[in-house]
Image 1: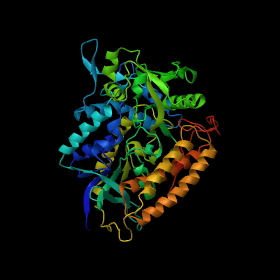
Image 2: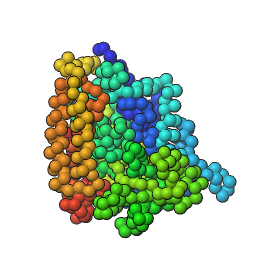
Image 3: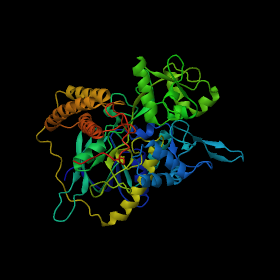
Image 4: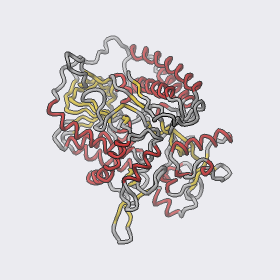
Length: 533
């Protein structure tokens, strides 16, 4: 086969989850290829500001962290998965420190250096380990540096997966993963990458919305790939909107960390009046779904463009020490957060649902794993609690590595597969179709499937999704693939999955709020929404 390569493990995604897994496997002699759709630093991990939740404070406890997570999750968290994840918090931080991540420290009363801990929404204690306000960047750069040094890891940037390759079940054999067709977008060449194990670590799907805090890469690729390959997805209606995104025409959806509210930042109306106490006794420290809905309510009720997050009453030295990155960024737009409040609006932020996995990150297809935001592990339930996401990446990367190392010796190398066939397609002469459909999709998802929903809005969205899906499919079948086209094809599938899950849930719970069913249904046990291809 021309243009094919063989690996032990193919990791699709180069964020915290994918690189953590690759490093753990490489240490055991496993040959790995890590694919990055764009540059290695273009994933969501790099842009994560807040930190990683873990119990270090003597006043805190694992039971408290577990309880906070269960409360935030609206009754849909898997308690066993929550306990598994939380109990690995400290060891995950220890592992990152061994990889060279330098977390912010402080000196305790005994004169010892200890980790500085922030507090964020939904947490009853300070338990957010961080590197100032750029934790994700510190984690990402450290893991990339370690991966570049490792002889067993091949880092392939600008490689976008077109389709997963699975075997045809024969006799009593189950379908299994054997590799992927991949577009090398710099050389416009389609490669066949074969592997004994494939891991999806592609992140979330928040770019399905018009406004998002995520980088351009968050187009739900792994969810769509797994769905087309035959995996179940679950709880896609629970799309988290971060309450505080910088509101400025040139800011491009810059996130203002949860930690600003954790350190005392107050949400204010344009006239300077606080309002969160009217929605929840925890005020600014309520879980994200409550804060985002409160802001959305005030904006729509009063016809205002934004609300304001104010921490300027704190000493300037305190603000510069805790939020140097946010201060520099806002200053570029003429906002000095030591002197004035920050204009903010909610923005799509995190995908709580995803590909159904078990406690070892295994999917429905043999030898196919999913870790990080692409997966639905049961940790987040109906609403992710702040800073549990990077923790989930680390814990399930370790869990997947344990299972892969145990199984790998018994997994045969995949058989030869046909090369990608481009003989029936041509170069597109109407790229405007891609850009137009991309814009239309994200606009109606924002309008109809946003923070507040209704059946009428959802059915409107479903009707439009089906039309777009048909149009995009026709385009895909006639023209050579490009990275933009692949993202659009994946995004329209994810949009349909979100709408279908939302229509199934006849109640309001966590991140899913509908005007037709405004109350949570307590008449029966909470259930996950599960879709099967």
